[in-house]
Image 1 (tube, rainbow, N blue to C red):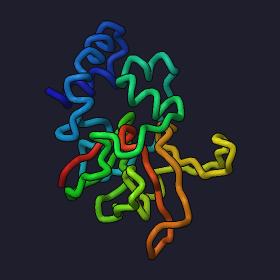
Image 2: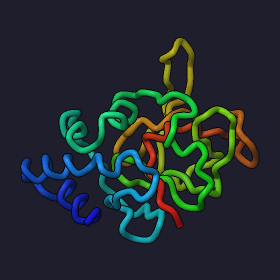
Image 3: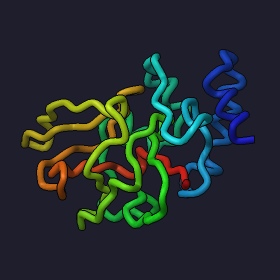
Amino acid sequence: MIRIVWHVIFVSLSMKALILSAALIPAWAFAQQPFPEKPGMDKSPGDTTWTVKIVKTKAEWQQLIPRKQYEIARENGTEPAFSKGNYNDNHEKGIYYCFCCGNPLFSSAAKFDSGTGWPSFWRVYSTKSVTEHKDHSQNEERVAVNCQRCDAHLGHVFHDGPGPTGLRYCMNGFALAFKKE
């Protein structure tokens, strides 16, 4: 049923189908497991064979994803540290995907406890996972991390992580979806 709902959301051009699908989202949106399959997640875990970027208007994203995820992923928000359900304490094996589009972002094999209250990773899943750009908000220069496929804001990357990369991808857990292996 979940796969059918996402098929309707992403494929149907009918506004009626979009409204119906959006109404079904809250049932799973705040639970860590299970979550809906999205385009790119129906193949092997971590499929990065997509070639087309997903571009939607603000109004379309507001209809497709819950408000909490919209504020973080589409409006460059940040959830409070140690938020319940943000995957900070998730220790299961699997892949972390973009909540908005299903692009694989991180493997649990690269996750570590940074003590910050946000899920942290020392490397991305693929070269097609994320983009990075300078962020001058908060009166400091940081490097923001976005989903390469749909441009969702995910968090920031810092150069204080563990080896071998020395990177700490500090992610907003509500911008992620997790699929257990």
